Image (cartoon, rainbow, N blue to C red; front, side):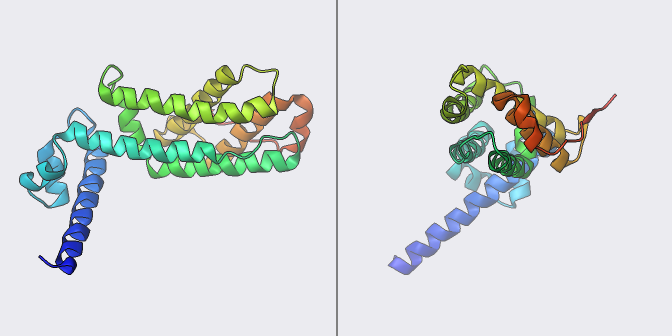
Length: 214
């Protein structure tokens, strides 16, 4: 086999892998983690069982790959959080970062909801989620130490992760009636004022409060 053929096979393999991952994400979103079957993924990917097992040992293996790729993207985003400052520029930078977080969550919302709802905390897949929260919080803690040295940065970072992630989860799962932008500015205002006090509230625009579904 010549170099050209080898490159083509590798390119074809990447396309097949991408098709399987896309199909898996769609099937998990539609059927949920527990109800999804390899048969469903193979059918959605328009490929064979033999091809599936060339790349993955099980549906759990495919889901783990999706989860690990997503976790890496979220940790990369956490590292890009700008310095937190009490002025208007600091607030705007925080709001822009939260928009990027919401973009990422929206793009992968179905997978994230499936991950949350799968109730796989005690499994290896659950550990991926635990590791993600820990790494994400660790990156945020570095910003908190500089912005608010009187706070316990580790606990503060975990509180921020819980607030930001849950708010986006509720939005994606339609458990709150709120526009995307009003949620972002609310999170930015709450975070900014929480770090820098009531005086910092003057530099932020008044957000509209989300309305919980009854």
